[in-house]
Amino acid sequence: MNRDSNAYTFIFAIVMVLIVASALAFTAVSLKPMQDDNIRKEKMQNILFTIGLDSVEVNGAKEPLTRDLAQENYSKYVKEQISLKADGTVDASVDAFKLDLTSEIKKPVDEQRFPLFIAEKDGAKFYIIPLRGAGLWDAIWGYISLDDDLNTIKGVVFDHKGETPGLGAEITQTWFQQRFHDKAINDEDGNFVGITVMKGGSQGNDNAVDAISGATITSRGVENMIKERLDHYLAYFKKEKSEMALNN
Image (cartoon, rainbow, N blue to C red; front, side, top):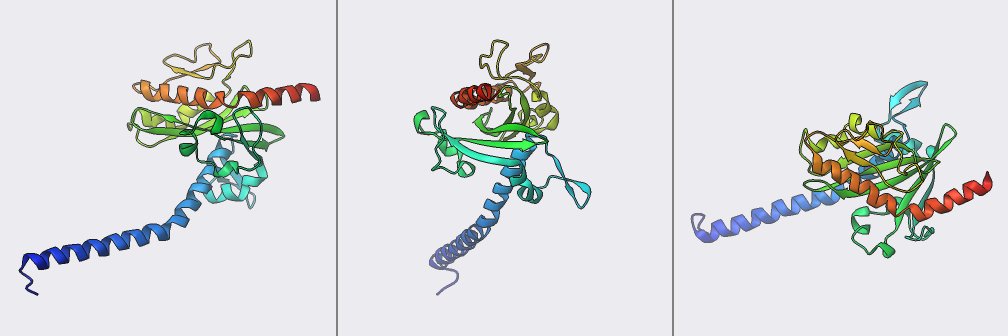
């Protein structure tokens, strides 16, 4: 075949596209198990972060909680993983850890399942709830941990897909996430109000934190995400509080 002909050029281009596409597909398939494993470990790491576990003891010395160490220590702290229905009852047929909020939130509420992780650390009990919502440009997500009073926030972890660097992307920073520590999701009368994220919000307000300067929409997205997700757990919280009262 004449290498200077249009037909040769066309066929050569097709062959090269097929070769490159095949190579990329093979690479993606080959790396998927590793990617899935990293996602699973990162999930464990984030859950443990919310209960204040950012380091663990290794051979007598404190080491930062890496993904691998999170996997090794996860079952030591997380004692239960349950999937809740909208009415607060448990669906034992669903693996809470494998639930994907990206898919769940697209379903009608009565068809969704709501994952809950119950952990214990230093004799205290914590309830960890996965979060997912919308920021300025794309999805935001994270985890929030509540003390055993089901009101006080122990810790939070946030992440995002495409928020603006230096502005909305700051939700991933420790200084912002620490603003939520010891805040309350219920008002003084015990009514659920969530957490308001606003400029100057922390001044004398147990239910509010200071927003990120210049990132009003992302801050509001965090606020809405927390309130929307936690609202689905109120029926379960009510049952838990009733049992606690009976046991006390």
